Amino acid sequence: MIPFFQNPPTLREKQLLRKAGTILGTFTFITGITGLGAMIFTQRHQPLIVPKLIGMDEKQAEKILSSRNLNLKVTRSIYDEHIPAGLISEQIPKANNYVKRGQMIEVVLSKGNPKVKVPLVAHLSLPQAQMALAGAHLRIGKESYIVSPQDPRDTVIGQVPASDELVDSFTDVNLLVSAGPNETAFVMPELKNQPLEKAFKTLRPAGITIEKIKMEVRDDLDSETLLAQMPPAGTRIQKKDSVSFVVSAKSSDANLKARYTKILFDMPEGGPKRLQIDIFDSSGTRTIYNKMESPKEHIELGVSVTGKASAQVYLNQEFVKEIPIE
Image (cartoon, rainbow, N blue to C red; front, top):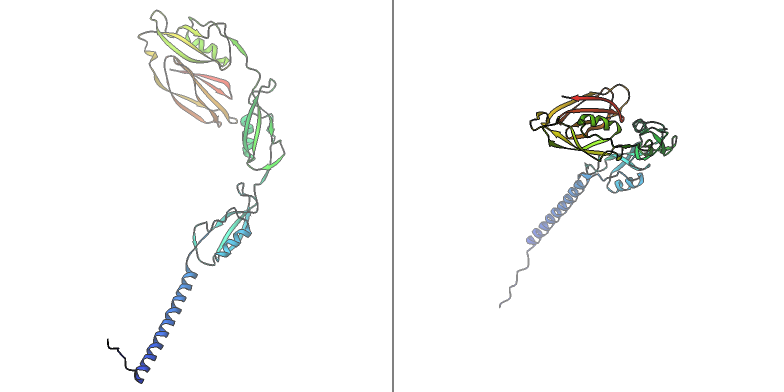
């Protein structure tokens, strides 16, 4: 192969090459400066994500914000039951929001849980004690019951923490509550051949519940005549025990069909009371309402009953009235 030899450049060509190199270098320099400026501009104006500061102390938050070119400002201090004293309780803007570089992040420091004085609730009824503790920004803790012949049922006997003790707000206050005297025992009376309604009125004042009633067709007897009872007569029973009956029903007795009715009751004046409404009908006795109610509250309940029926109303477990159901 014959080697190729290029002729040396002329003076004119050398001048053109030098000029082209100068232009190329200048262009490269300008491009580099422009790119660097664009990068600096982008970094300075790129939005930043606000970190979560709640639960940190002031120094920790300031260090984290400084590393992101953000500033910290403490605006105030407040009581906060959930955040210990000295830690950040609130922040503006909130975490994960976008802000500009150098923006101020405002925070609120917690002063911790405020202290409150425990009120004296001994000798109050349980509903009164619950209201007093709630009004003092305290929570109701464990309620323990103990038999106490000298204290009425549902009366507070003791409390922990004690009265006048300073505690954090929303602290649990445990109550020792009277269960009243020992339950009185009764002797089951002989109720066979008695009307079911009479048996109910005999047992209900003692707190005895008719749990189950079985119907047996007997056209030779009046409807709802007691045929059998459990437990039998002479058995010792206590309050809140239950009994069962077998009662007669006529094959054509329309009164034993279920029907829907409404129970109406207006709470009396005074303080809040626990309202309990029990229903008695051919199926037995049952509680259809049991909760605290405010004075002058109007109560309206729908209920399905069979046969002869009535409603018994109790306030704070004391019998108030009987409402016949047609």
